[in-house]
Length: 80
Image 1: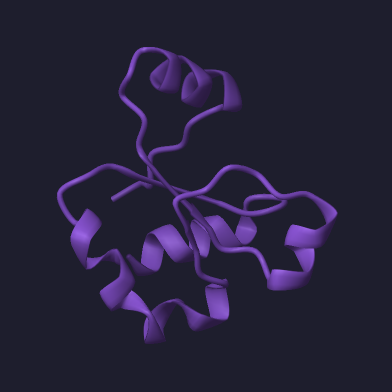
Image 2 (image 1 turned 90 degrees about the horizontal axis):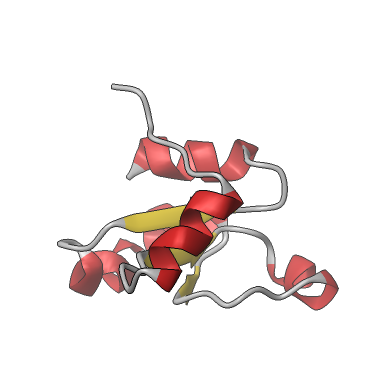
């Protein structure tokens, strides 16, 4: 199955419509110092398989995974 993707404009529209998904940032901690966005969870991609229990309470919610350029978020979404 293909992983659905959202543009930033589509995400903004969802949030403004009151349909905010869970935001999962899979960047490394040092990247947060460069640019920190509003997220619900921060789990670096390399740690994701060890921290799945942190997602348990969100299992019935849409989750948007993001990173700097999209590669790691795609890998994380495929893993999930």
